Image 1 (cartoon, rainbow, N blue to C red):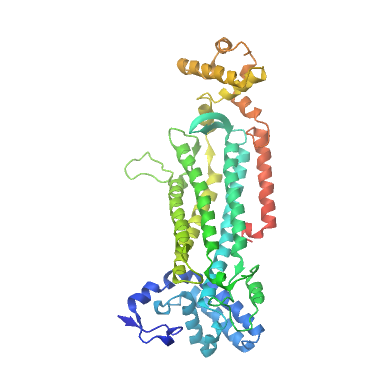
Image 2 (cartoon, rainbow, N blue to C red):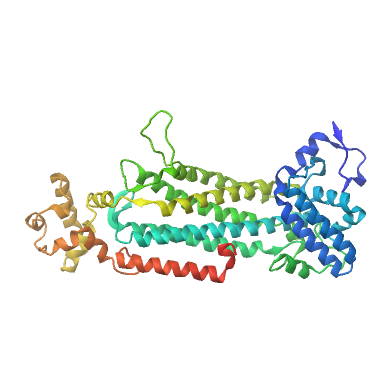
Length: 473
């Protein structure tokens, strides 16, 4: 079957487009979400055209008023999107022409759908980045404040998921915060490269009309116009870069999710996750499943896939624009939706976490978590570290055989491994003594955790002051 050819480009065609081809090549099913940014870009373009004399003021006003009415119609749900018109641009332009007549056809002077869609996506992504930045700010604040509250809550620190040394829960939470802080900086750095305007590049070579791209860039809040028209219409680095940011962010959230899943299990029982972030089982009435962190962990692979999809999309494209680029939107849109959902879940959930301090402490008291402290004690008494390491290893082997942790052994039991051990050894074998001894910047001592939390607050405030977009301003 065939249908009427799109009148925006059908002049050189001798037969209508096949109905399947029209549906196959149309993007209106997903790019309609760009309507606000498409209209915003068109208003700025018409304003600029009037300033340089390509449009009259009356034509500009008719176009601007018509576009504003169309936006209101869309938001009231009164627009029926047409596959025959292919995309959001032509749907809006056709409706504009219906409203104001031939003047509507003048709007496209000096531009192409190639630079138009590149501009729309950048405008859309820039606004979405500001929303993402706001959620990251909220998550970081929640992590910092919870860390400050739990600055002296002792828990086991792990390597290889084996008990390694005691740390504090606050210190662990600030490790999470450091991950997200780096993501925050990556996001804001990405925004700088999003904020470049392609409009005016036209199809690929620029336009013969006397446009002023700096005016349009200023009207749209872009930092500057893109330097090269070929690159302007074909570049999708900004979408790839955002998806790369999103992949790293989701990797971090997935690592946190894995710990939350472990910590809520009966085997760890370190934290309580409020019921509103969990679900139950249809067959096992005792179950309380940590579905939110599990789902965030699962969605990470989805975002990784979008990054690989966009990289593959662009890897073989010659300059300039190609129809392949229509495939950039769905992975980008889904990445944005996924990131915003995961961040909202975490920003709501993290402040609601409740540490089971007694369980954490009891776990830290098992597994010989203070073995390194005993080695350090011997070194301070003049024992070479390698010899101290061997002495402590033998004492641990003894403890395993006897079912005793180091702090549970008597002085006589410990002295059998080294005469350098005296009764002051128990000061370093306590969990409190172990964490307090790490009293330097970056260490797990409670005073250091409190100070680190304050530095994190200050750094976040400074970042948001320098970059208003970091908090969605």
